[in-house]
Image (cartoon, rainbow, N blue to C red; front, top):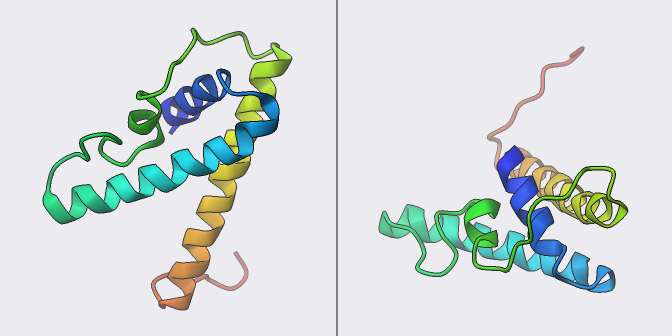
Amino acid sequence: MHGDLVAAGRALLTVLPACRQAHINTLVIRSRAADKYRKQYGKCHPEWGEGSLMSCARHYSQPPEPVLSNPDYAQALRCVLEAAAQHLSSCTANAQLQGRVQFKSGV
């Protein structure tokens, strides 16, 4: 997962800060579609890879990874982390609706 976050963050550095949220949303949608494609056809999607953010982000220009103290990179990573958190919470909510996730009380 670390590699996915870094690759997506580096890809976002090539996009204006005002456009980063839309760009990461596109990356997430494409990586999910690639994952479904891989599961259905047993092979990687020809443009978006095997379903990870890293494989999808590879198709975008990526500068070398800056240091974490770089404010522009920190903002790009924040966009990625927010998108990942939103995706994980929606996956958990969907799984709960389908009865696949059970939470133990008191945990």
